[in-house]
Length: 304
Image (cartoon, rainbow, N blue to C red):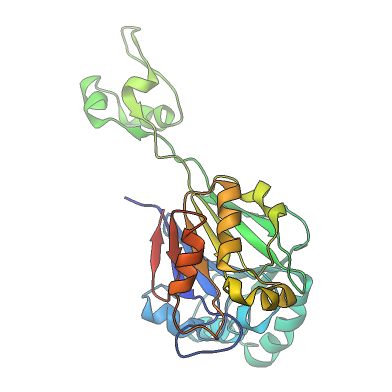
């Protein structure tokens, strides 16, 4: 059973097309939902993908370009109409509060929940959020305005109890929590049953890195080394390298170079420019550099 999934809601770039929605993803870690970026149309994408609105308590914004944040007012308004009570935390640079606060005051003044802002410095790597399931850190990216990616790191789960051994040694229920935390079991006759006889390790914790929008930037490699999955923007193909440089975006080949340098397990490409109707070239260019490549598309779920 997987406890870590990424739902692709949108993977297009700034100019709207009939093929792709603006950038947005939902990370599902142990049934807790975390949204990354919130372009236009996110409400419909949540509905289409049957993702529960009420399980979403954190939204992480990479930067203040419209295709990454114009969906926020609508989402917040709809949350209110659905009777949401739990607070919603929006993480991002200081400008996100400047952008959203007047809209909330105008359109969501009677909302039954509060929108809280966690202001971060997108130019620095640092811890952004931590709960019982995971921790999220910022990754400074290289774009036209201050921009950061996000690293999601699952926390190590407790080991699994081996039911047959628990029954064999007649271990009482009151002892199980301690055993899951690493304790040995001491029987009434003084015999010590080692913890490794009673448990088996949980799967290693998963790590996911989201890096969009950014020019080619090897400086991010140290933050994403060895992640299970890397989403890296690939706005352009190599034939449009000059355009990529001018707009501080990456090509598919450059994204693959970052994946290779960071020795990640899987690379997901996205943030495709509207000039491309056929995405075959993205796969071809990236696969020539890095083997395990996936093309993002709306509705796709990536399981770690």
